[in-house]
Image (cartoon, rainbow, N blue to C red; front, side, top):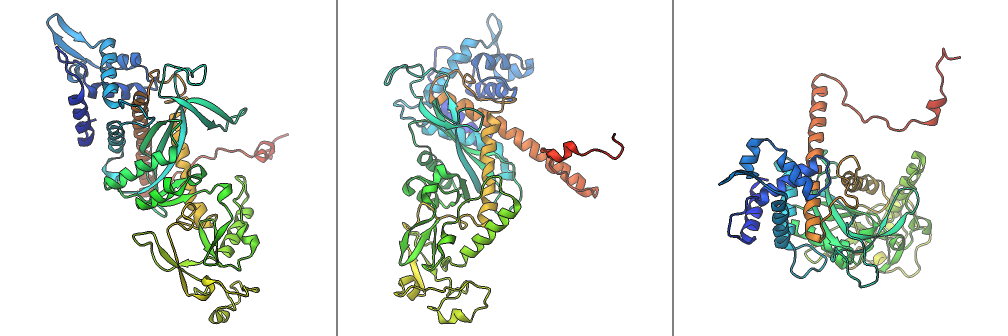
Length: 491
């Protein structure tokens, strides 16, 4: 709370809050501390519990934080009415005068600074990769009984959510969408704690990807380097101008799963086949172009076969020879020209070893990509599906595995043993209070993850100094064969 950026935002909020006849006993800083203590104790985010958390502090802290002050009638302990009043004034400053489903700039700035304060100087520059995802946050208010009717929470709206639990898998809910950007390790980089670095809460009628693109753009404007951005098909299936193009313009590189409608051949460019965000030789076998994703329970042999097929497909992929210029244009070269395959159209490639695939049926009328050494690829070609690694390749699969950090962020704030942001967790209505309380929950969650990461790193260092092997994760799954195996002395 005393970080420079957080303190400056709190002082700005205090200046914007109305002044009464008597000075307000409860300050915004103390209120936020009460919310953090309440959430850290695994209590629901109710104002009564915030008041109880502040009143349970030692007397020294009460005097220091203004919870207990001297009055003409004696010491005066802060009341629940004062908690309620300060919260109302704070929400009034943070919310928009004309709600549109998105938070105000001041509320965004407050949440950004709170989350950045939990990262610290050590992990601030250790990674620039982020895993993004959105989840549902149900409102405490009941939905309107009829279309266009009134309800307690006027900013909430109907949204859709999917569940992995038994029973109904898809259903509607009344509330908000919450999006988080979780810090993950760079490709080949050192491990970092999976800390939530950015968050955004919007009404469900606001499309999540375009709204969150502005959050990542603000990181670029603030001087925070944007590296890999990992997302699922819910983001990649959007209009390029609303997500992919904006992320690339901000300096990020996409690592994403593709929607089923975006997989496979999607037209041509100068004769080269556009497939899964890359350009391929027009003589590429159709069986390779129709390569699909693996099943979740794929075996090692199936993974090995898929990697071999993806490597064979990469032999036909046109290779980059230049980086993107300021307008997003770059040049690519024929795979036979690069020595990746053998083609009669390129006589010098026929001298390559026979371990390269050979084009047996070249086109009778060679297109431009077969005649020229290189071709120019504009920014609007495969702008939706272009990403860092070739889709479904071994490098892509290893890189995309990092996206599960976003799922872990969603699960930890919904864990019934800790935060559990189910309906009724916060009984205040409106986008501003829900965003504020959820930001405090993420701060507490980040502190827990950071402490666990530090403890694990310290334990590994002690084991390394003493010559012991690092502690591995406990095996969680016991196969059926272990249950029927009997010892030698058993009857």
